[in-house]
Length: 282
Image: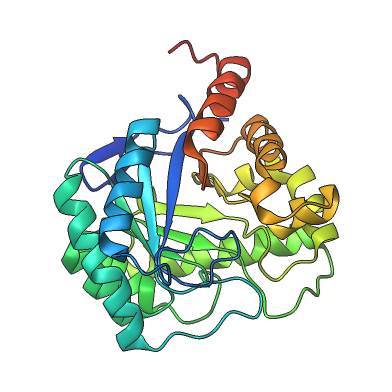
């Protein structure tokens, strides 16, 4: 299958199919499910974010995803002003510290997306990318930045799990294109852990290769998620090995980006998988 067209994200062009790219996670929240939230420790969250971003860059991250509202089940909703106050200073500081690092903003709010792009973000990561509202797509089109559309549902009810996920994502891609987002700038994410039971997540991961039918770069986010915890009966801080298994198997299914907390370890797993699956030689 022909790889998707290259995508420019800020200062870097991503040529899909050559190797897997690593997206490091910066959670500017007090309530991240994975325990890595940068708020609530008593120290300066901006300074902590810059230090964590620098560490991830040194470990091999290709891009960083910055978010100010937890998406874990039962999370507390964050009002607009608070989310802006969390993410904008961090994006400005990380951009100043790492001018060559592509940054994405993880949000559902158009105002946050706009402010984040003004502060130095280079793409929008929409965790409700399959919703009918195309506000974030229109912002991406107007600002000429890539858009990640993630699958989600309010309830885990499906007639045909993989077929329904594909149909929802296909609709999201079509809305983005109609809004004016260039063909090469739409990335899809199956939304592991969002609107799906643990059993459904496993089935989707098993059949992940079908997402290649969409002809888009695929982003996979499984890092430390509850499905891994349920399979292995482990808390979030002990889910690294399970995450590495999903990273390697995801790459075998054609994933292009893995969104992770533990960059160094996932990078090593990804490079080994790339050598086997894609013939990567370094």
